[in-house]
Image 1 (spheres, rainbow, N blue to C red):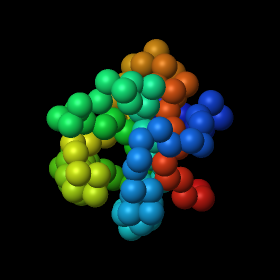
Image 2 (cartoon, one colour):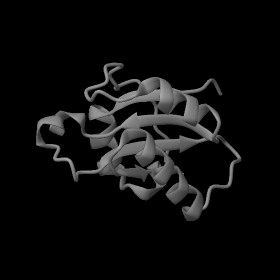
Image 3 (cartoon, rainbow, N blue to C red):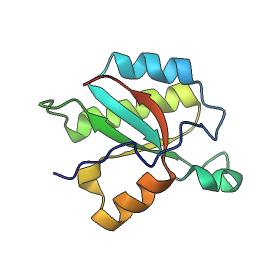
Image 4 (cartoon, helix red, strand yellow):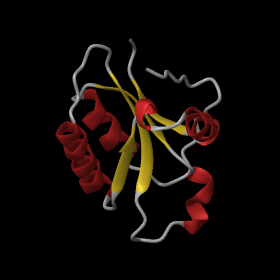
Length: 111
């Protein structure tokens, strides 16, 4: 399992995200960390473009693809646009490092 940390992530959110709603939602789920991916492309976003997030679940939590799809739907409703969730296991090491360098921390709980 690949692990990632927030050492290279900015605390600044590039989109006008409803942070309080997102953080409240995440706090009620087994989500340990949620980061916005590729915010440098904000100017390229169209209304039909999904917002990508890297999600890290609490250790020992079993999360199925159906669980993740539910989280995508719930977050899409909060944001009013499509959401795509990625896990570190679903990305190649090179892609993971590239995304982490540009990711924006949205939510994190204490381990």
